[in-house]
Image (tube, rainbow, N blue to C red; front, top):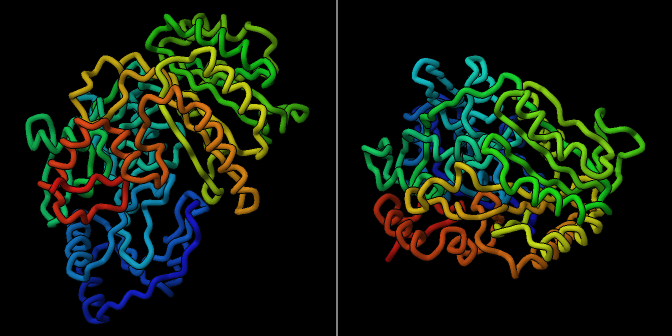
Length: 470
C-alpha cells in the first residue's frame, strides 16, 4: 500500500525560487498557494504526497528551465502528464512536479493521416480531434488517461489488434533530456533512443510531443458488453476461448469480472450482482461487426446485451464512470500465454469472491497486429502473450482498501504458475525485479546502457525505474 505521508520540509533559497518563477511562461505553485491542493492531487486517491514545488509548464522552454532548476537545487523530479499512473509516480514528496498538463496542443493532418500531440493531452482529447476527420490511433480505454504515459509504456487499447499498440504507430518523439537538451527521436534520428522510448517509460527524459500515424476508424462501430451471471463464468470463458481462436483482427475484446455497476444502462435488479462480461470492439463495418458478434450475443443465457452500433467516441468513454478521479486503486497484473482450463477455473473462483462494488478484473485479448511486430524492434516486451490480466482491488476510500488489495494479490498469486511477462503500465511500485521481468534480461540490459547515455545520474527515477548501467 502507498501510505499517506506528511509534507517534507524543502529548504529552497527564496530568491532562487523567485528567479526561477520569472523564467516560466506557465506557473509555479508552492505549498500554501490556493491551487496547491488541487494540483498536487492525482487520479489514484490512495496517493497523498506533498511536493515542494509544482511547475506547470506551458512549453518546452519551461520544461528545460524546470529541469535545470531541479538539478541545481538537488530536487527529486516527478513528471506529470495525465497523472494516471497506478503507483502515483506523477507526484512526489518534497521535490518538484514538472506538470505538463497545460501543454495540450493537438494538430491533425488529415491528408498525411498523422497527428502531432503535446504531452499534456488526454486520450479523449486526442480521439475527439482525430475523429473529426474519421481517423484514430490506438489509445486506451479511459479517456482521462494521459497520452504521454500510456504511449511510453506501450499503449494498449481497442485498436491494437487491427492497428498495433500506440508505440507501433509512433513516428517521432520530442524529448528534453536530463541535462536540458532538446532531441528528436525517430527511426532516422537518435534511433537507439526511439527504440527505448517505445516501451521504456519516462526513464530517458521528458517527452514533450509525439507524432502518430492515424488510421480510418468509425465514426460508427459495432461494440459494447454482453453480460452473464458469474456462476456461468466457466462455460462463458470456454466458449469465448473457442470463439476468438480465429477471429478477425478488427475484433478486440476485454473480459470483465465485477459486480454490476450502478449506472443508468444497468437494470436496477442487476446492480450489485456478480457478473462476467465480454466487452467487444469491432472496427470494421457495422454489418461485419454484427455478423462477427452474433455467436457471442446468442451464447447461453445473457442477462444484458449492450453490444450494438454506436459512435467510436461513445465506446471509448464507456469505462470512464468505473475509474473516476479520487477512488482508491490497486492493481496486480500479469501476462499469460493462453486461456487454459486451469486459468478459467481460477478466474471463476476469484470472480465470485469480489466484495467491493468497484473492484474488477480486465482480461485483455492480445495477438493480431501486436504480435506481428518483431519483438526486438521496440523495448516493449510480451508481444507473444495471449492475454494480459489487470486485476483491480479498488475502494471508494481507505475503508476496505486493505481487503481489496488482498483479494487482488490472492487472484494474482493463484495465476502465478501461468505468468509469462507483465505490461509495465500495469505495475505498482513492485521493485527492481518486477521491472526487469517486464522487459526480460536482454532488453533490460540494453535499456540500462541507454539510460547511462541519456540519464547517467538517474534524474528520472520516479517511474518503473531502469537504473543506468555501471
